[in-house]
Length: 136
Image (cartoon, rainbow, N blue to C red; front, side, top):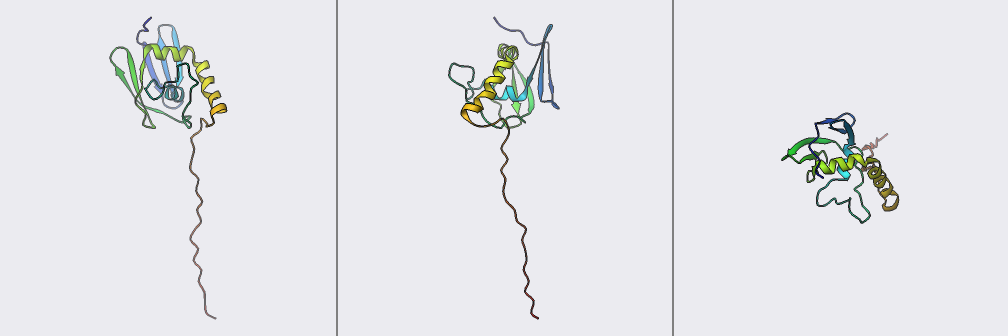
């Protein structure tokens, strides 16, 4: 079965959520979930093998949404990822099974390591101290 285009697609930047509406059905998908389940060739996480997810995607945003023909949209994320084409069928599948996909994503960090949170490099800084020796 081929899913028709949503009647409405709205991205809410503040809460990083893509809202999709098909007739009487309305769904909400976070940018994080869309990013980690990208349908690009390098992110095949819907197959039979246990998925491995990239860490640090909790704060990802969608910068641009482009229509692809009459069957999909392409998302540009603020981390530079723009390879996935999200068909209407794929978006609806993600939306209808959002809880299962989310749990798989979160649980994967327990077994594979990593975190939803972005890593921030911490370095140590010490101010330059000038020492003056005075003759008495």
